[in-house]
Image 1 (cartoon, rainbow, N blue to C red):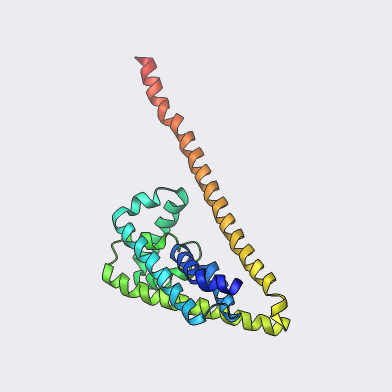
Image 2 (tube, rainbow, N blue to C red; image 1 turned 30 degrees about the horizontal axis):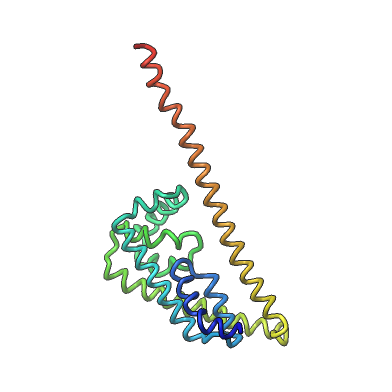
Length: 210
C-alpha cells in the first residue's frame, strides 16, 4: 500500500517540496529510493526541476517586487540585506551555491533578482546549481540508507522508525523556523510601537505651545 501511494503521489509531493523548500523531503525521498519505493534517478530529476522552477519564480518576483517581498517580514528584510552584500561581492559563486547555505536559501533568489543579476546568466548558473544540489543530496541520502543497513543489519525491521524519525526531524525544523519568524515579527512590532510615542512627542509639545 505504501509503495502504491508513493508510486502515485511520491514524485508529485517531491516536486512540490523541492519547489518551496527542498532539503528534508529530498533526503526522505533518497532513503525511500534506497528501500525500493522510489527510483533514485527519478528522485534526482524531479528534485532538480522542482528546485529549479521554484528558484526561477522567486528570482523574477525579486526583479519586480523584491523590496515588497522582503519587507513583509523583519527576518526576511535582515536576511535579504545580508544576501545582497554576499551577492555584490561574489555573484556567480552565490548563484551556484546558495542552496547549500542554511538560512539564506529562502530569500537568496529574491535578493539575486533584486540585485539586477542578468536573467540569462541566472538561468544557466541556477540550472547548474540545482543539478549539483539534487544529485549530491539525493545520492547522499541514498547511500545513507546503505550505511544504515550495514549498521543495523536487516533494515526492514527498522525502516518505519527511520522514516518516522526523518519526518519528525522535518516537522521540528519547520516548527523551529516558524517560532523564530514569529519572535522576530514580535520584536519588530514592539520596536515600532516604542518608536511611535517618541515620534508623537514633539508634535504633542508643539500643539500644547499653541
